[in-house]
Length: 257
Ligand code: FES
Image 1: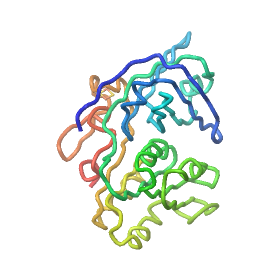
Image 2 (image 1 turned 120 degrees about the vertical axis):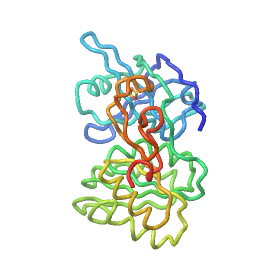
Image 3 (image 1 turned 30 degrees about the vertical axis):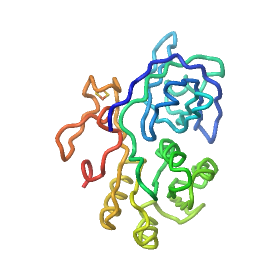
């Protein structure tokens, strides 16, 4: 995929909402990025506080090309994301992007598999496939699967698992995935995954066993996000690669199998 142009903009926050406990949705006006971002790409958000500057890579969860906005869904985990959560509509946040390489766009009927906050970038993938994709989502409890409402307008079937069995099948996404692929009998032409690494490894192995191509979105600590600092380097089947520039999405066989 050719590298697309990056923009560095001061974006005005247009909406901020708490979707679930400590999970927020932030919408920012950044028209050039909204027009060009591809599903699976990310941006670097920047907030200047008196005592520190936050630079954080965040996946794009949705774009509205008409309004020129991008939406990011993130979990508040430290003081950086706390500063992000305090951002009010009308305030400014720096947005650099779109960055990295996203998911393949040419599948006919992909199955999206997401766990936890991995469901955020996959939401953009679901919207891009406009009803052609199905989704398998996993969470610890039913409360963590607030995503179902967000995905409903964009996907065909939705499959759910929870660790405690409070919603959907008890277990992990990897518990249910073999059944789904067997029942589909070759109907899925790709499995696109984002979530904890252990989950992605398991999903990649199951997809390979069923002969279905699999793409995974890796998460690594990123200092620059631009391919300049090497902090996100990983070993792949094709040598060292940078997650921020060569990924975050990779064919599963290049990084896991
Ligand atoms: Fe600096 Fe990837 S984050 S090279």
